[in-house]
Amino acid sequence: AACGLNRSHMPRLVESNQVSATLLPELAKAWGLGNNVVIAGGAGDNAASAIGIGATQPGDGFISLGTSGVLFVVNDRYRPNPESAVHAFCHALPQRWHQMSVMLSAASCLKWFTELCGAANEAALLEEVLALPAASLLGAPIFLPYLAGERTPHNNPFAQGVFFGLTHESTRAHCAYAVLEGVAFGLADGLAALQASGTEVSQLSLVGGGARSSFWAQLIADVLNVEIVLHAGGEAGGALGAARLGWLAAGGDVAQVCSSPAIAARHAPNTTHRAQLQPRLQGFRDLYQRLKTLPSPASSV
Image 1 (cartoon, rainbow, N blue to C red):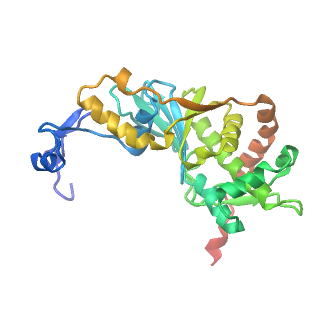
Image 2 (spheres, rainbow, N blue to C red):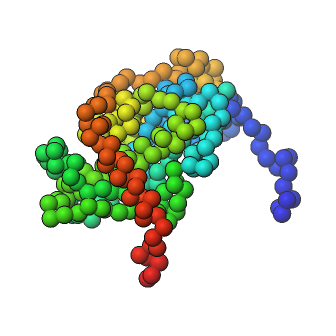
Image 3 (spheres, helix red, strand yellow):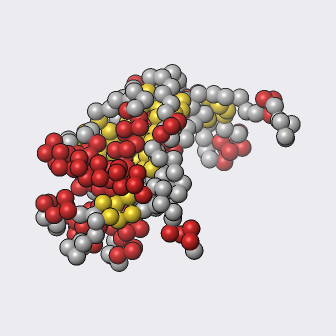
């Protein structure tokens, strides 16, 4: 109203897999293409990634373990949960919807700690974690991964990162494990927020830089109690999804176009390890609730 805008100023709406326009003739000529190159409506990054890995049916989903952490699940209807900061949108295919839980710091937590502790790189630090006796991991500190506040489920821009339970026995490898575990616990909180609105999943694909660690993938499977699968070429899911939407706009069939890439690895939940992690997950959740009302140390600067 302030700008005097109305619907006539807006572009028409199309589905992500429908034709929105055709390529300008001069561009088609410059690129050596035909005279009728259609342009699809397109999609956001996560919806495109879903199309790229074949997540098109209700219950299909993936975890993107990059700078932030996204848990994306396809739904058969609109399933909002605004109280827990769950995103609910139309999917990139007609008559399909999706939910997302988003944690603002995921693999970036590991990058931050790698630089903080002076490790050569993330891979070298992960090797130190793998060298730890398995039993010692249950005595590692608890890490809250809220380095940039948190969205799902807390919707709290003032949440902060915390290491809790440090002792003389705590090594940088133990703290690195705590970071991996804390991110997995944050994803578990996100999944719980999706489940609270009726979403059910039994398998999730894992994409993003964090997917390179099979240890982290297994830890996430154990914490979430969901099978985690990795796809060949999964890191290119978003770009592949955009190309697939273009193929659909040009007349491709959804069943053929939106197939799932080959599965490179599977990580089934380990029930014994999951049971061992439950007290730590509860401690993680309790710690946030106890600390969330404390003033930030930065507020006194």
